[in-house]
Amino acid sequence: MTESIDAAGAALAETAAALYARGWLEGTAGNLSVRLPGGDTALITASGLGKGSLTAADVVEVRIEDARPVHDGAPRPSAETSIHTALYRSSAGSHAVVHAHPPYATATAILAARRGAGTVTFTDLEIIKGLGLADPSKVVVPVFDNHAHVPRIADDVAGRIASDAPPVMLIGNHGATTWGPTLDIARNRMECLEALCQLTLLVDRL
Image (cartoon, rainbow, N blue to C red; front, side, top):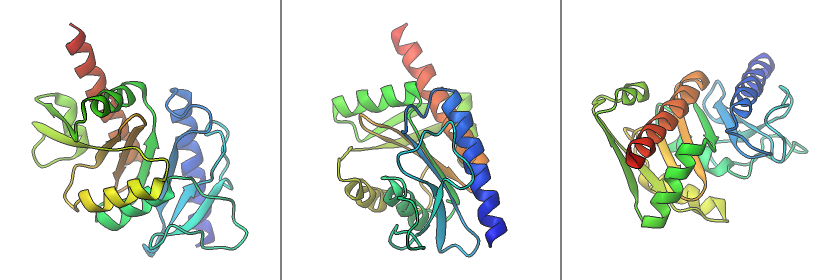
């Protein structure tokens, strides 16, 4: 298990650094996690750290049942851990979660919040295929209200995300979250969501 945790921590640090370099994890924002073998715990990035310089040690093992650290004296996990664990409990295909602030997806989340929209729909765009949906012609992305008390967002996620839901969501005035069977796939889906938002906003401007 130690080797698994070390490898998962290294993968989280590497992926975080790549997203930071793109400007999607500004400051200490954003968080990434992977479900560990056995399925009852996950490894998540620690709170308050810049994502461009993480190491394999800058992660925390948490219980999926209650989002609490497994080990006493562990670093404080991300403030949004409860959202990650809600997704692990809700979606059978969720083994990695990425939360970031890519600019176009975040702008779309802001506009949706201003309109009071609970979803954003994308249709007939080729990049939808990257989300792994049965029907790649359309995706309805849920938009969640942002709350300072993060477990309230997690409760909303648990209530709305079904096992067959699209593996992407937006949080109003905040950012985007994606998930998948592997960390690479969860990251790819973040890139696809950002592309969908970028294309739509550019077309709307025209």
